[in-house]
Image 1 (cartoon, rainbow, N blue to C red):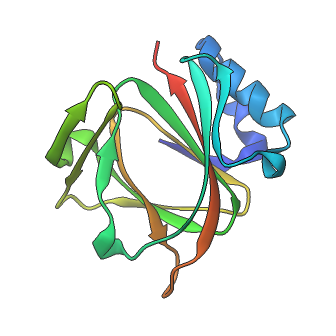
Image 2: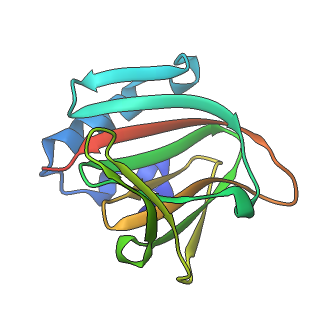
Length: 154
């Protein structure tokens, strides 16, 4: 997991993964606020972005998830949310991994790391990072606009 200001992200990588390089170039060169809700193909199945808008939820409604084929770069263009992060090995899977959807769901009793995204913060979540996104920041739900860039693991 990497958490940083979006402008500092590229400086953290010795970009040997050409897919990450494409994702970072797209992130720098795209007007993110102008993107429509839905999927934006950047490099076929290797790099794409999912743009969504939703209301965050209380912790008790959250589910941990993990992916095996893709790295997530999660970034909000509006609002704030919490992401709980635990090792994938600490997730008690209750919806088995689907290779077609590249996702599994479950719960965890592990002590999580908490990440707040918003205010130009971006988080990179690798296949070893089980995560529970979409959790409200503060006592009430809030509306967010999120971009998740999916980068194929090489």
